[in-house]
Length: 170
Image (tube, rainbow, N blue to C red):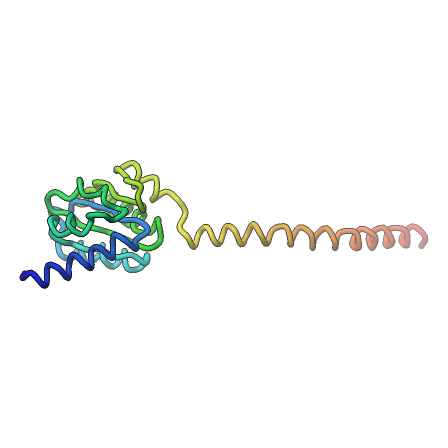
């Protein structure tokens, strides 16, 4: 890799560290190509990406970035998983690490917040952006359904009272 290619990689990594909601660092030693492709596919489905880069170049790219705290994890065979959604990459990596013991999560960063293994697991347990939106929409819709039920209830109560009176009169 010549100097121009290295500079391009550093620039790309810098963009990743700058714009990602979460970055997860893991060791992937022993993963087969098929397993790595499976991980990439799962991450793509969740809206994230996986990147393998030279640790030295990644450390250069981290200089001055919010995620600079992950530099300590960049030792050995490391893979970077990232997503704009603050929980998507953490969820996919945590689930994949449970299924495949060859992938070992080291830590990560969420903006300027450094995450250790427990932090990554805690982020993975949080609901995703889409799940939060669905919860909020259901909470907004629930009062409207309750109001409609309350408005309709008196009419049905009056109708049942009238039918009871009519039955008694007959």
